Image (cartoon, rainbow, N blue to C red; front, side, top):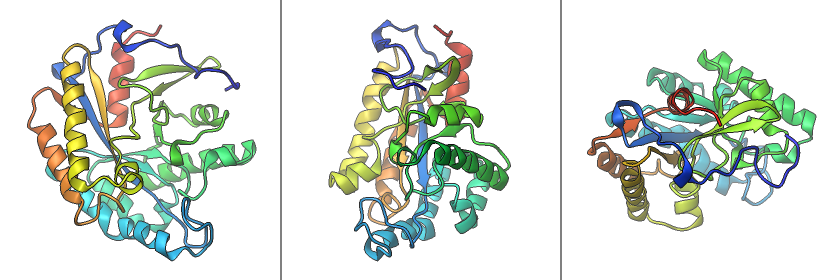
Length: 289
């Protein structure tokens, strides 16, 4: 992708698009994205002290892998939700039991860098190219399926990232948090689809950076749902619920996810989907152009 003033997609305001319909006449597609990550102890933790080891910032994140992620699994399974995992590929080596349990739940896996301590936009182009390929190859080896989607660590891309994703077979990317519906991207004549992710209905920025309580986060989930559900009666919307095991997986926070999903699942016209299911339906039913 060449540097440009705008993204590789046209500006089409939401009130000037064809009606989007979801399967079964659903108003809203809801996907839940557990970010399952690794932070090597011998590397600085981003937003931490800048040194290694950084125990005070590393240990809570390791708690997410040791304990918190399994609370998320239990809540999602109880509500009939299949997660779409944003997966650091080094998790496959360091926490293989998580992969085993997520596969047993039939979760989807999308790429999410090798670790959350290394961002793509800080790499030289060739190093980034090789990193992206290793992520796709390792997740495919560990899970039996090549990832179809991608979320960059920190939602940070370089000018080359979309090219490297397409090179490795990605159908969709979640970094571009600028819409409530999917849309097609044209990367120098090659397609990839953007899927709505969220920097708002996201436990890490909401509760860690902005200091929202678990009760406030649950209310945010419900209010986000209410508006998108109402708007979805006119044209379908997508709602993302973005999770981190070391945040929502804490005992005093997990109830926010449970309560939010209970509220959502009490409504008709909701499609609980994975990332690839949403993108496949969109591409099959919304004409290009």
